[in-house]
Length: 239
Image (cartoon, rainbow, N blue to C red; front, side, top):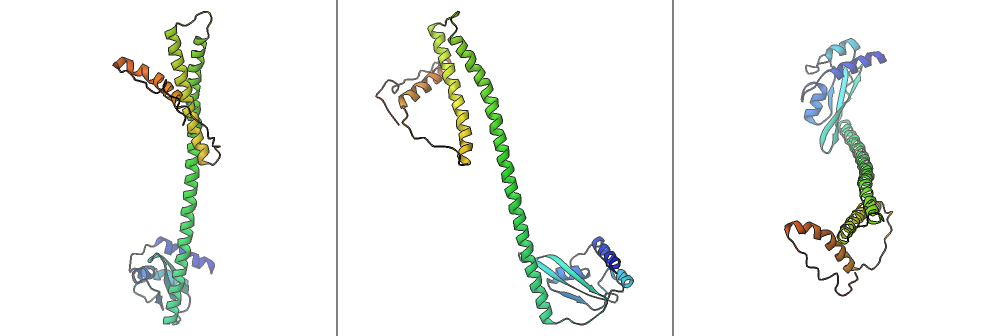
C-alpha cells in the first residue's frame, strides 16, 4: 500500500501543472480548495491513469498562502469517492493554508536572518584578515627603512653632514608617522569591537605643524613651492 502511494508521488513529481491544469493548477488559479469526486471520470486530471492503477478515486487540494499569494498546494487522495465537501470545510481548509503560509514566512525570515548573520560574520573575518595583512605588509618595509635610516644617522665611521642629517630626520619622522597611521587603522577595528581604551590628553599644535611642514617641504621644492610656517615658532597652542 505504501509503495503504491510512492508511485503516485513519483508521477506527481514528474508532472508539470500550469495554472488551471490538473488539481494543483485549478487550486493555483482559483486560490481556493478544489475537490474531485472521482479522478477517473474527471476531465481535468492528467494523472488519472495512475489513479486507475492505484484505485484512487476521491481527491481534494487547498492552497497555502504567503504574503497574499499561493506558494504551495497540498493534495489529499482517498480510495473512496465520498461527497463531504461543505462551505465550512472549505473555509477551514483555507484557514489552515493561511496558517501554514505564515509558518513558511517565519521560517523564510529566520533563514534570511541567519544567512545575513553568516555574511556579516564572514565580512568581519575578511576585514580582520585584511587588517592583519595590511599591518604586516606595511610595517615590514617601514621598519626596514627606519632601521636603515637609524644606521646612517648613528654611523660613527661615516658621519652625516648637516643637510644629510635633516633628510634622515625627515625620513624617520615620516616613517614613524606612517607607522602611527597603521596603528590607528588597527585601533579603529578595536573601537568597532568595543576593545579600544580612550585616553584624553593635551596635544601640542606647534609640534604637529612643525612635523607636517618638515614632511611637506621636500615635496614642494621641485615645484618651487615655499611653505610659510607662522605657527611652529608662535605662541604655544595646546589642543
